[in-house]
Image 1 (tube, rainbow, N blue to C red):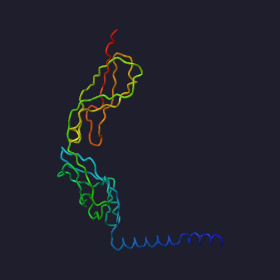
Image 2: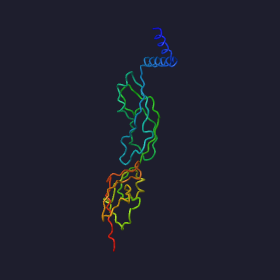
Image 3: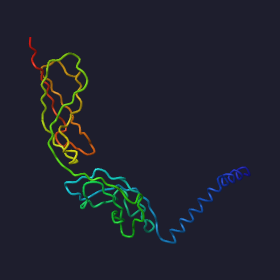
Image 4: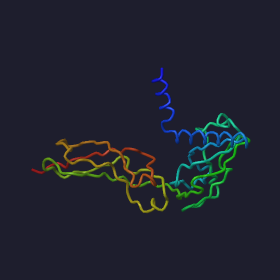
Length: 226
């Protein structure tokens, strides 16, 4: 019995300063909440831009998630669903280029009695692109070497054009859209060969290929002269 009591005493005394500090902090937190009648909750919320004009597009938000500290009555955690909360930014007055914004509590929709007291970081930067659409010729891309010498070939692309959407400035500089590389060694000895390949955006963060996603490449060998 004495040995068991001594073991229990040793366990209680182990890391005693840390245990005392934890107790003091718990008591302080309990006293603060009971005295002020408030509870604090910290969440990390995504950033969402709404009502952008149709000719504009959000390219990037930096950061795209913000840490938010909420203040409300005890038990407020049961009144909100964090997965449904977001930081909503009204994009109706946005213009192309870089937009720097200070975050406002009104950008988070919360139940009555709960409010935002802190954003971290307190501001963010948005990159807004002018949006455009164009039809651009599709050009097949070949790589590697053939296994054997081949006769001259003719290449047919179907469809010939791709509908592309994205940053209007970059879009104006594009003269064609490439396909995924076609290995020359895959070409066979047939007079005609058809290959379906995926189209490739030159910059996926700024340019989207709307239609088609794939192109059919028909390779026709010219008749050899004897």
